[in-house]
Length: 350
Image (cartoon, rainbow, N blue to C red; front, side):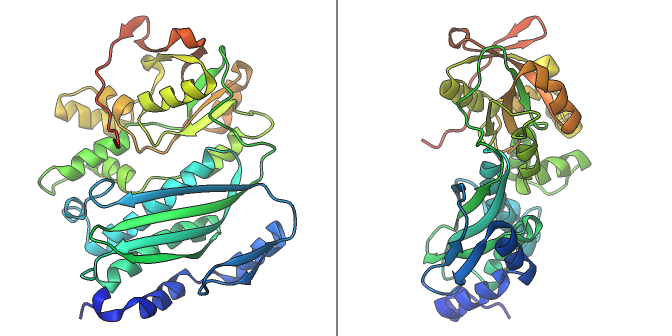
């Protein structure tokens, strides 16, 4: 029999969530041993208190997913069982925050604070599955949910704040690229926005390549390992951000912060086979999704020319997009020697 939040009430729900989020003893031991992070007041009190015995450079980030803006359950139900849908949402909510940590360099996540908002007609199983999805990343990267909040809301909301510890020599910022640097990405982009398009259409039948695109949208992978490699002494990326926005917007942000321009050669940008098949079936260019898509969570970064081969050797999925230019150059796209003019079709919050 389905049990709803309006029937169970807040306190029993909180206790249920605490049980799902209870950290493994090995995780607590690692936090104490490696980071000297010793919890004084654990999950379940008014606040989580931890003693950090050694000087630490902490990294904070937060991100929110709101029904109607970032996800639509009615679309996802056409392709996923109810339980899997909410697990995917929990995993994605955690992944987008971890992606921000990855963009700062070598960062190890320590603690997460999770706030959720639901109506009373949502089932308890929904909340269970949401947190189970979050816990998959908590266990994979060995960090803990330290607390959060529950609110009543007409729209479903998942908001997460993660605290990590910077392990690299320095953070890699959006500011730092200089003319002559090489512009690179950690992996193919454009898949997620194509997957979102598939979600929004009618019908359930999927080709194999469409399943790949759908998975890219529903279950993004945060590039924490890649961020750590790019911040290492042998590479030392000069600037970096995660491509949660589309490529065009990400370049504008990176260029604005570093006060540079970019010469982007689309002939050097790989098109994932699944995206290529989808574009061919739709009779459209894959560049529509690659340039104006978004939500890919790959890393977009710059390095010194002498270090680009090291990146390609360490990160097999990485590739060169172009070069950094003086600010007056602006942002230009070309296909080999042929200039490419683009029509702006980007999503904006406001």
